[in-house]
Amino acid sequence: MAPKTPRELAEHRCIGYRLVKSGGLYAWDFEEKGRRFEVRVEGPLVFNNADLMRDAALAGHGLAYMHNDMIAADVMAGRLKRVLDKWMPTFPSCHQL
Image 1 (cartoon, rainbow, N blue to C red):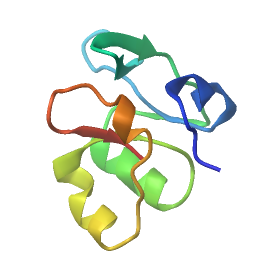
Image 2 (image 1 turned 90 degrees about the horizontal axis):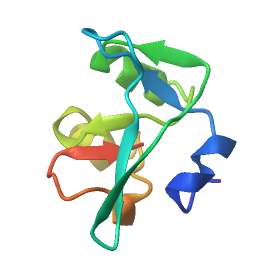
Image 3 (image 1 turned 120 degrees about the vertical axis):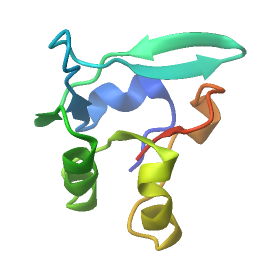
Image 4 (image 1 turned 180 degrees about the vertical axis):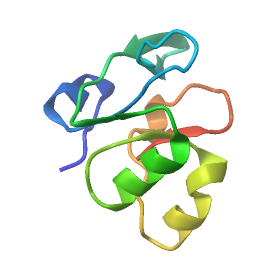
């Protein structure tokens, strides 16, 4: 079952993104009532390459936080599903899958 709130991500396998310059893990950005907040996620896989993250999500290995332009065709074809849309920050091109 998909998470209903970002806080439920702790109960799900998430695909992490390692920041190339710092080596740290990217915290997923969300927004509630105009206030932004971050959620640090854990999961079985961590990549520093968005294409590998997409491939892992397509293979069913977990949830990924991805830019819309990378996954739009997969969402349209029903291969991926957006979740937590109402929590997404106002910057236009990221969604979690």
